[in-house]
Amino acid sequence: MTRSELIEQLASRHPELTQRDIEMSVRLILDQISCVLEKKERVEIRGFGTFGILHRLPRNGRNPKTGLIVEVPAKDVPHFKAGIATRSRVQKLFLLQMKKPSVSPDESRGLNKERP
Image (cartoon, rainbow, N blue to C red):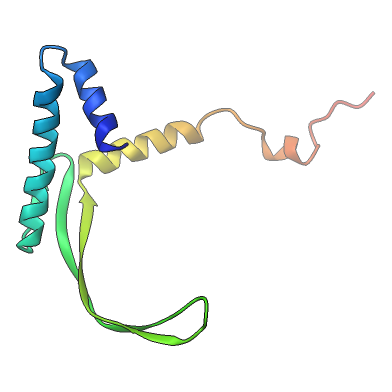
């Protein structure tokens, strides 16, 4: 989902709010998360997840085109860890998709075919 898709979805769910107010709210929330991460602090949204910064140590990498060894410097990267509620919703959806009727292993091997 893109930022504009999020804004559209929020506008359709909350017709009492103007498009401009929704755009400003989304922009302010995302900008605030970015500002906190710039300070190398963490943002916790209960029931959703935690944004933080991970420090990656310097390492040797390989240029896939030439095969040459390249030194990759240390860097800080943003990281998101889903909360328990978010993980359980995703897992629940995954399990529901797994329960959909599909071809059984016997059918895929042709063992359940009726013979004339």
